[in-house]
Length: 455
Image (cartoon, rainbow, N blue to C red; front, side, top):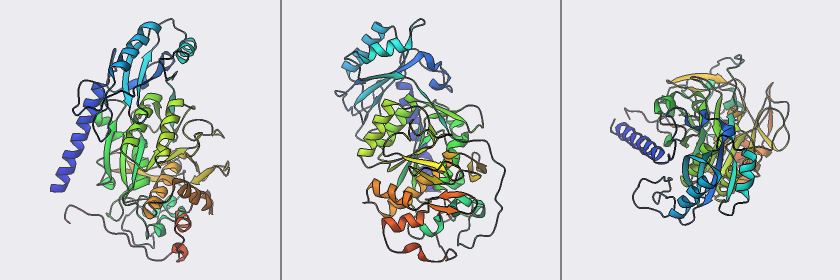
């Protein structure tokens, strides 16, 4: 109980810090709680990025915005702030939000155009202004999930040594051969950043899995805990194994950083929207937190700022997983960025060699309020791939991100009636050739029991 109380206190402090940080970033007109930028008129909003290389690392948080670098808050420099005010006057722009992006050493602002201003003209003039590093529209992005599909799997008694009652309904877990892979790796010492909606951080099947919680959309942590899409993604990646509850995550010992950048279109809905600014803040935080894997179960247009952040993370050895949007478009964010793993649902008829297939239909995972539910979409294929990468990274911490990615691509295998899917146990053998997965499918798999309050 002491450990649980300490954990609760820690989460509370993280939430309070996030809320205070969020309040400190508002300038000018501010934003209504609960709506964020997502409720604003996107056609009137732009993102402007300024150099902030002289921004000081302060030992104490002040009234200026700050990031989450572990060395301390990173402030907006006086020079960047003066430049921002001068640009606002010159172009008739109203400030909405401002945040220094620590990895890129820049100041990022969201500004509203004047009532009669032409956005394309303003962006063209800003792009030619030497004071401006980057200017772009505030773009919109969407999660890739649909409402629950017709249930097409039936429960059965698994022959493996897990005590999680819904394991027999996890056809995706079986398709990836995750049980045999977990004989050798469960994702220890690996952190997966989930950039998504909020997550039910109190769900019993996520107990002890979450390290970092940030909300870049609003200050509503009650709604954060009721968001469905992020909760489903988190469960697929890292639901606790052998706790006599619910399901088993692909990497049940991995740690999660939950970074809310997307807002559901309505209460209880899977469909959610994000924007350039909230995604930039979440990506920056994932980089500063040194997450090894970043799950992006969303898609949208190509975005220069977001691309620069992802490439910065890739240079640091991070792996980014994106969801393939409907159709055959691989040019947008994030899957259009070189190095990002494009995850596609196994059931899709379009399976080029450049995508990595994983289960995305009738996927069972967690639901808010301690519940469980099925959902469909390439969002959940991406979650399976992120979990698989956590197993590979834990087994081979010194392996390059390119080797881990290529091992998954080389492990593609056909599943009965479901199309192609990666086989994480085969990928594990490619990364560390020890003939680990040659044992029978029905070999006994023993995963350590989850710690409980009575331990």
